[in-house]
Length: 203
Image 1 (cartoon, rainbow, N blue to C red):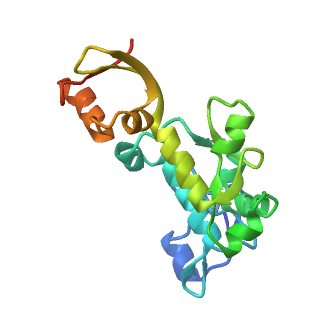
Image 2 (image 1 turned 180 degrees about the vertical axis):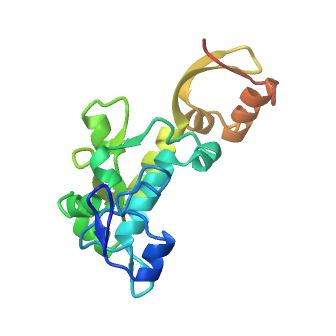
């Protein structure tokens, strides 16, 4: 038996204890934030990673991995409540979330955007009161919409000089067949005309 300063007690053999190979289950070794805690929930069963652990780990990674933030800034500023830093607490709580049974048996995914927006929270957070499980296609659709609604207002000037203001680049491109969504991004990123169009971010 090994007892840590935080009160956690772990069973192990003498070799691991003497070599100092053990770490407290309360040590935040998952992106310096998350930890397994002590309880009935396992990260693996018969060698296979559990669905609970995969979901929890991905949540922590999206919010706190610098590498993930370099790939996409979609989760920059999004946090996980302190209670859910503990894997055991996360698993205890999600069984009470809407859609849990369908997530457990199907294609539902954990979502925090719907309830955060409903509650008027500007800073989004994963927590027992801001999360629910929703169908995967719905989650993908909402993510795509959020990606196109960046909060910026764009100005587009057509080849004939007509000026447009819009927020959703994908929607604007679908309404103007002579310019594509990717072309709008290229105009903005490269600061040049494409097919006679000019696009800028409104100050």
